[in-house]
Image 1 (cartoon, helix red, strand yellow):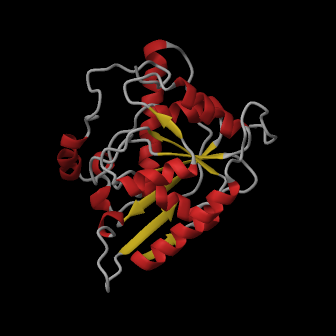
Image 2: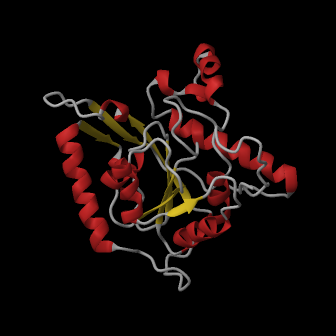
Amino acid sequence: MVAKKMNPEIKYPRRELLRAFLHQLSRLAFWLLADVEILGRENIPKDEPFLVVGNHFSFIDPVCLVRIFSWRLDFVGGAEMPHAPNWVKSIPKLWGYYPLYRGTGARDSLRAAERVLKAGGILAIFPEGGNWAEVLRPARPGTAYLASQTGVRILPIGLDGLNDMLPPKWGKRPQVRFKIGEPFGPLKAEGRGRERRRQLDALGDEIMQKIAALLPPEKRGSYSDNPEIRAAAKEFEAYPWDADLEEDVVGEVH
């Protein structure tokens, strides 16, 4: 069982007052801009650390998780947000998150993320590693790596309708649905080298299948039961950043 006491190597939780304000601000923003439905709140674990995973179709996906969870939530995410306007980029920086620099080992951020979970915290990550499509794509290995290293349970969330929110359509609020699945795990990858990487990829697929089950059938992409949808999603599967760089077997990018 993961220890629930605070780890002296990391200050957690962080920025309680600012995060509480941003959480309330996100509630107001979603109330103004969308008709929000949150399903599955009863599935959120209590009194234990856990890893939140969700699909990444929109640059405002992190704001959705701020809306759902409290100030205890920490993030791992890309240091650069190429599809987000400047005002959106400021939110993660105000909230505080652990940046992953594409094309680097990201060791410091991954280790900090491990410490959050070992301190009894809640950590969010988008396994696809970017929001370049509106259908589900294969996971990058970092999420499976964190799950395996920490032994915490995983909470999947399906986020739907966010790309209809912006720009605002005054007088008509689009339907937005956050569907929270049942927690699962713990997951474990063992071995070394290519065998460990193979196991991490298999765990990543398992995580994405859990997310796919929470999305409308036409959004499940590479994890759809429909072969035509899977075939159409193929063009989005390749990671569009640092495509020529290789990843090591613990899920870090070089």
